Image (cartoon, rainbow, N blue to C red):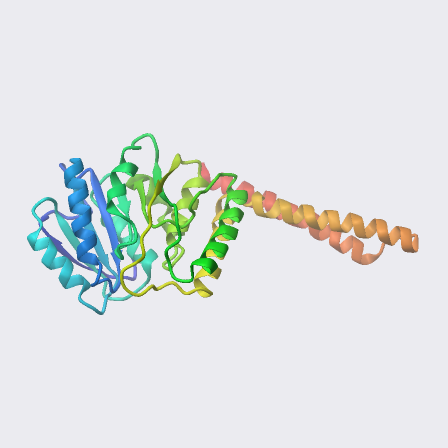
Length: 315
């Protein structure tokens, strides 16, 4: 990543990650990690056991987002012991966030399919084969959680429900779980959209919306969800606001009329209603009536212009 040098420790693999060498693994399991010393080894063991038993040709790629605990040494120790698959570690010297770590991981991955899950033990690796069996028919397969096990579960549920309903409306698609951290996708399909992925908390939401708003085949598979091991990094206010802003921002990037047309319709309807009332009350339209109507029509024009720009860039 430009402006963000990384130190790459390669264990059990000798070739450059950028070359996509012959005989590259079928699947890369990407684990972004920040201070997950309590959970990381158990997650690695679970991934290796699951995919080895299922017979997949895979590698594990851990992107350490400048952890201050023993996360990186534990990964290196596990890599030295693991004989079932290559285990690689990318160590980032500066902490930039979960999204930045995921973007580094997608670029560094060797597999044609990237499976991404959190390193805190919340997502059972046993569900990975359930996602992989839907390739190559789908471009992205997501795990839809059947329960909420995070901190402040009631607040998280309400916030996620509202934002998910907004995203369903704006994208025109049913979305069972908008910000699931267990997802599998074709690496080549994700690479063109990494530019929209933020560095922070709402990165997985962006990855889902980028596919949904660009007509990729996306599927959801029900999965179990566990309490995390260690301390949560979720902030109820800033992360929720970031989450909401991400939904609106991505839809504005790719489906701007879904945002502009309802706003224009409301403004025009309000302008007409106000004009009718003014004419009934005073016998003439007021200047404010015209301002509201013009604002509605201008909003519609902005939306159409944005849609033309988006369509042009899609060509």
